[in-house]
Amino acid sequence: MKKIDCRGMTCPQPVMVAKDFIEEHPNEMVEILVDNKASKENVCRFLKSQGWITSVKEMDDIFIITGAPDTCDIELDDEETRAETSSTQKILVFVPTDSLGKGSEELGRALMKNFIMTLKEMGEQLWRIVLVNGGVKLASKDSPVLDQLKALERSGVDILVCGTCLEYFKLLEEKAVGETTNMLDIVTSMQLASKVIRV
Image 1: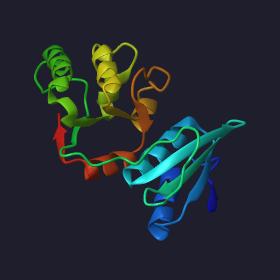
Image 2: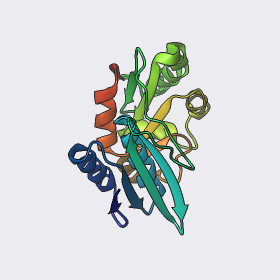
Image 3: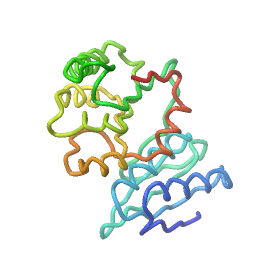
């Protein structure tokens, strides 16, 4: 099994390393070391999206990610996550702003709140919500739709929040829902989705 040390790397570098490995060695197991939670989540999510299973162990603030193709006849321990299975429809909602439409900011925020509240009507077809640019404000502690987003997350909807955008708006510590992500994850999500709805 190949061992790759990604400690000290910033996102999305660990994900790029994982991508290069599985492209060159699609049938081999890999062990990837990262030193922060965001990289751990991003690498695991990427491997799952490519049909791999993952297992994570934490030792002395280091995350050891073991990945294997889903075709391997193996059992992984601890925080095991199975590869994503394809459903009939996977809808991704791309939200680049905290206000819907142009004209009135106040009206736009009210419309966005109604939009987020109505997303649950998509049922199981709603797969993932991606928040970028001003959209990341919707994931903050003071968001008017925080409860609705948390409810969607509890129901199984993935909520990905752009890390660069959080940093720009100084909201990294204010994020209260979803997983911090990077542009590679976002592009991969769009590629895997059956349909992308851009707000």
